[in-house]
Image (tube, rainbow, N blue to C red; front, side, top):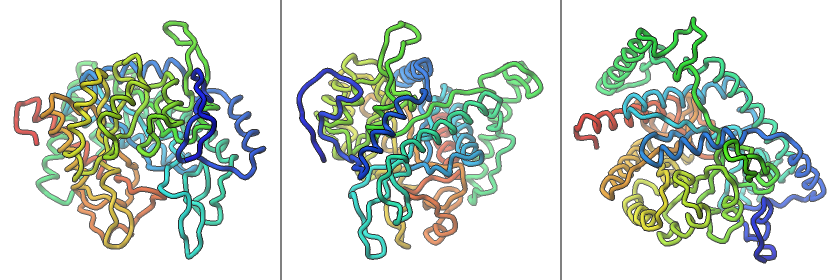
Length: 467
């Protein structure tokens, strides 16, 4: 960690510079770094206060148990993902997952993509050994390149990150406003990848009932047909953008004092995304990241892992959300299947004692990363489901509720995680292992998750044993 003068002052977008900072980036060309920051400060916002307020209202409903959060996307975006097919494939899987979960849970889904800005990744070490040479670790395309010859941090990559994020967000808005959401219609889905006949029949049963429900709604006019110009909730949906707020100089440049659309008060908004989160490596109470996050109007997330002390969690919530706004903070828990029983109950108790009403979202990915027999990073589908199931049970046992889920996933048919209805094995990983950082669920495994969540909530509604 690096540290500058720690004098106390009022909050501003730059007051984080007076705090200790983890995961900092050191540039050789500091003059160019300052030029880039000045340029970023002049560029237009990517999101608006109205959109941010809309998400805050929806997350309030999630925290109160009246909606469900689905957050997912790439571990670390690449600039090359800013292209039509990758954008559409990620939106498609999120839309299809949300439709299945909505059908099972019978509550609205708040959709958030890890997209249009998820370019930076924290690393456990600033350097690594590649082919016998020590080089800077790859920290995401807004900092350096994956090629070992391109590992020197380059401030111009921050500008590239802005323009790729803006282009991605612009295309998402365009296609969502043009009826792209209709592509999630279940009649177009294929279940050929499901190897188990029993599981395929269960999934087919859900799809058939979902299709029948949508057909009935079309018939009575609750959903518009493609030939009409009348909008409907299933033809146009909200997709909010999120990323980890890791590179604070970039976030500072995109923090603007703008008018609240309801109160007309001027407030500080981060206009690079609707929602940002603090990672498990940067959420120390007196850290630069916590200092920055406590001053922005956006709803925020905090990753909560085994190293989080229960008393520290309550203090952290008081710092970042002193007004105790309902749903302002999403706690994204990431313990691992073997650790969740040990840590989650204490964290639930700490939040209750603090008086905060948060969104509890389960991230069953990060705590379950392992090395495969072939030596690459992977995640086992069964471990992901086990942590998800244990999280639901623990919340119920402690008079709490899991309000959402957070996945690293892609709409592509990659082979990075073992298991699922495709029954991917260790020897299958090499078929299409594409990630530059952590392993992601592929399209089929993501849909497996959605079907399992839907089946759980349907049984809950019917009073049947669900776990």
